[in-house]
Image: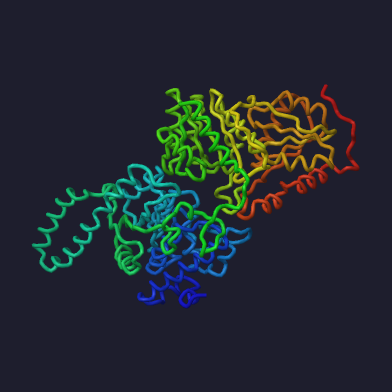
Amino acid sequence: MDALLERIQSPAHLRQLSPASLQGLAVELRERLIETVSKTGGHFSSNLGTVELTIALHYVFNTPEDRLIWDVGHQTYAHKILTGRNLRMGSLRQQGGLSGFPRREESIYDAFGTAHSSTSISAALGMAVAAQLTGSQRKAVAIIGDGALTAGMAYEALNNAGASNCDVLVILNDNDMSISPPVGALNQYLAELMSGRFYAQAKKIGERVLRNAPPLFALARHIEQQTQTLIQSNTIFEKLGFTYTGPIDGHDVDGLVATLEKISKAKGPQFLHVVTRKGKGYEKAEIDPVTYHGPPKFNPSLGVVGAASSKVTFTHVFGQWLCDMAAKDPRVIGITPAMREGSGMVEFSQRFPNRYHDVGIAEQHAVTFAAGLACEGLKPVVAIYSTFLQRAYDQLIHDVALQNLPVVFALDRAGLVGADGPTHAGMFDIAFTRCIPNMSVACPADENECRQLLSSAYAQDHPVTVRYPRGAGAGVVVEKSLTPLPLGQAKIVREGEGLAILCFGPLLYEALKVAEPLNATVVNMRWAKPLDLKILQEIAQSHDRLVTLEDGTRMGGAGSAVLEALQDMGISRQVLIMGFEDQFTEHGDPGLLMQQYGLTASGIQQRIEALWPVAQVTSALRRVV
């Protein structure tokens, strides 16, 4: 371990270092990040960019008594190293190891869980108000970056915080980079602020010279106030009630410490604009911060090389379908909330730039924007992670479904997501979408069916979600056709006796492994809503035991839909609902997690045989009268 870093078991040890040692610590810390993330994979370039800022914050503020809220939370690896977790960094994002995001139960230094973006200012304001009410002197600091300031929630919080008299500090980590290239008027505005660096430096020098001559200083201040409107005007943050400082160099650790020490003593809402470079200190990440945003394991000397797997992913299937459909139908509009690369829309953005819209980290806006397009006869497709659609639930109901608008929602990362853990797991979308009137929910079992069901969704005159997992599926050949499958039509893929397994999504292939030893019928249901009631009735009347299988939550999910339908039909059967239990999943290897949650072939078979022991099974089938 490095000389300085090995002495730091907590920020208290960091604060014992001399200011002259901090730059050397930054070098060691950056080397440690490269060493660990190259072995575990994870968010990389964003963490390299926050090394000096992390050091300065823990050096100046009395953490954990003072609260640091990082946003987005994937920029906290240096924070973890400096807060007693250095020796555990090899377990990062591994099952049973460190989370890739701040987690309150993991450390007292993780003041707030921030894996979804743009929540830090709200949380920091809440903590600042709490400190004020309890008479505490602790500070609350929100560090917001990586495009998180493009979300409306951040501005709601800024509006509230600026009107308060609370001692809250908002730090904008301006690295001119979100997960996808930055978009929007705010990014342009920040670029204009950057052009005022010379003015800011000149202002500092002038203040030092003139403070000893009060009349001259007052005159200069008056002139400065007038000139400021010509050069860069008052910032939007000052208009909102903050005292604005910056922009300053986020890699000058001495300057950061000096600035933070001054601001920490100031009263009222403060805003510090810090400029950093994503990927700082690792040339390949500086040149290509998008590729190095969340790389897999890699050799630091070689960098990230092409993926070894030749399997086609569900995301790729969606991206190709979108391009093919857009080439056929000029009404197609593709929308993403700042996830162009992750959602497979790079090719679409290049081939159809006038029909591609990255709205920033603004899921609520993305959904209502799509609704507006649909009102005018266009065919919007919103590519969004399952977990991120949760952030736009009101818009999904009020703006899309209530008006019965034909918007297609391509829900990537449904089910488990592995290393990103519970904050990104797409467990809930079946439950929270199928209860919405006018909404249909498609659950493709493999890559080819994903393409077919996307075409089915596109063909409808009402909103439809098509949910699919991260990564590759069964490896089936994907046809080039855009022919849709019928809405709400299931398919019996294996005939058995006594036991029927009704599958919603990719777990179909696990069910087929179980079906042979259990002689079970297997049905690919395809749709959680509408259900194929005809096939369901036939299966229920010819089988005395039913199993529903889904990679979503059991409560309110597709299995619940089956029970509701059977009750409506007046059919009583033994039903085992299999999915995720009433708990958040952990981070780790997806295959191992599925095994842990009993959703692999062996786990499914064990659950079935435990409920219905072979010796007790009768082949006599009960019929519905």
